[in-house]
Length: 218
Image (cartoon, rainbow, N blue to C red; front, side):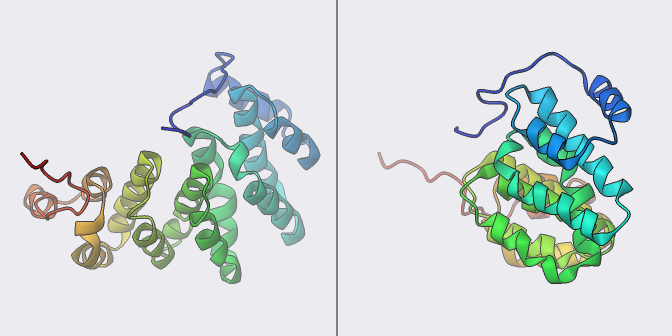
């Protein structure tokens, strides 16, 4: 599937701990440098850029500096073209910003409506920052919106975030499932109920799915 797991990506063979060492040595890199690194053809260089963006956000001394980092992230969605690149930055920059700036939360809906799978995953995983702050409504709205998404990477992200919602507000997750379980891809539903007890998991997984393949006529 186009936009799949590392499709067409190029790897240097640098480990994540090694990439983090590079970030520690260059944590004062400018946002201009980060943006240039995001255009690099090598995966690990773009990973360093994503981690540097997190560092820049954490070390920012003003909302103006933090907003600049968020703006760079939002316009860089297509360049974060693998799941690990998205996941390494989305909750800690976009999600962290939206906790304190609820007026900007509509950006999640805009990203979720993108034709670019990485932007859709950016929206879902970015909402993790909100979940950690006890705000779950945005995540559930995104998962309802993306229930029919064509890409497994979005299905898995939704399941992961729904599981996190359940860890903080099981009643809200179960109420959501009552309404939407039949619409969810199986991988989403399985992941969402991983922390339910076995009997509850069986109950939810027994819900007929609109995504189940229909038998072929003979």
